[in-house]
Length: 225
Image (tube, rainbow, N blue to C red):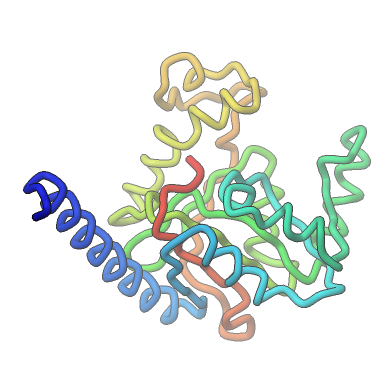
């Protein structure tokens, strides 16, 4: 006989997982009408397999700063495979960064996450220099996004609040930046040189000419910030 506590926990987990799948399907339908492609993967392992299935061997691949991409093991898998990797982290100075970025813009695949995603399929992203959102908007042939279901919000307004107050503070701490949010844990609407919220981009849709260029892998686990 299963103890009541364990039975209750299992039932709660089952219903939570089912609700997550239903929420993901709602988002996928929203992405579809916006000319983007979505798929749901229950685990990080499944998400890794799905992402690799999109990327052709021998192709050029670049990425923006993303904990989610690293968390599912995608960068490690690519480094072990047959791909041409464009990694701006190897740059020694700003000029080298710009040169590498120019190659990333013309890459076959660009990897990133989304700071938030609405139930209706809108993407909300905030950037310091804009390199990541630039590649999302235009340039690379394909954009593959790894998005944990912890980043789902009701609408764009909620998404911006989430990014500024819940994603930006830990990111500034990770990067060792001194900002109001790194000291208080909430957005201070700053304009300092270390601000990472310079660009706020809402991707409402992709052009029909670039249908399914953006592929969003929704993951039924908590990923990133």
